[in-house]
Image 1 (cartoon, helix red, strand yellow):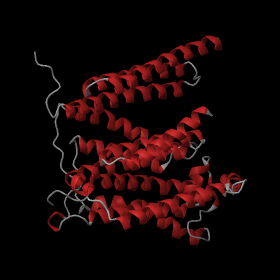
Image 2 (image 1 turned 90 degrees about the horizontal axis):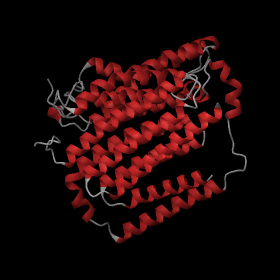
Image 3 (image 1 turned 120 degrees about the vertical axis):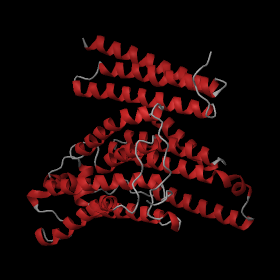
Image 4 (image 1 turned 180 degrees about the horizontal axis):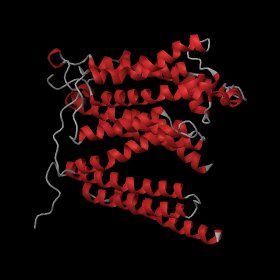
Length: 100
Length: 310
């Protein structure tokens, strides 16, 4: 049983690490502020989410598991907000809404 | 081992970059990154209490203060950086820097093999405090006077900063009044995050007696929630003339000093706690202390009074 759990942890954390790597490469390589932010959200949301998922298999304590999930949710909230604010600043106060 | 080596190299690199970079804002970003990496080092050294404080105070709150300072300096920055100091000053600065660095290197290399430590004494006497977290025991019992002085220094810093207010604004509220946008992102996140943050702050404060955490870390989170609410325009900062605010600011030190002096009568020394009531007294000090520190930190970030007094 612990072998299966360890394998699941390994897979999830490795996948999370991949998203962090991809996000970092995007942050360094993408040409403008908006696409760099887009790359960064992949690391924050998916990367951290997968790492938290991987760690969940290792916690026997439901309270610790809840804390891990709370960390992820709070990062989602903060990350999403900060991304919006930076994007608005990058656009020089113009709205981020796309008008068609 | 390899991870630690990379971490150390990264900290050194970021430190050099922070000093070398010319742009003030870039240097601030470097400083915040440096603080987070140093926090990671504290985690690796098995000192989570110090890591928490470094991340919250050293990197987060100081970072916020520096961002605000760099925004204020932006107007005059080009002028200031174009001015080069004279040759004598440059050489003097270089000599002093090399001297200090050499002194620090010598100190580290000359450290005795078994570093002097009071840790066994703390471990032997911690039961008397009723606490289980040795760091909190040192901060609130064995070296409570250091904590008391730290809090007094924070208050002095706030008073010093308030004194920068021009006469006609004295008594008004610190910082600018942020406009509130009911549909804004910041309003949404402030409404959602502030209640959660207050709960987290109480939790961090409360676990301080048994696990990493305590009044400074809890107070920093409380201060951050206060700052978030004022930034989103949900609340204004209170005018510095308000009596309830002043009472809140001095409550921590006042209770600390009162119990400290009471120690002369009930336990025979300044800041001594009677044997069976140590934990209770520490808690009585810590609660107003946390609130006072939180208010002081939030107002330090808000800046000197900038709004017309009512």
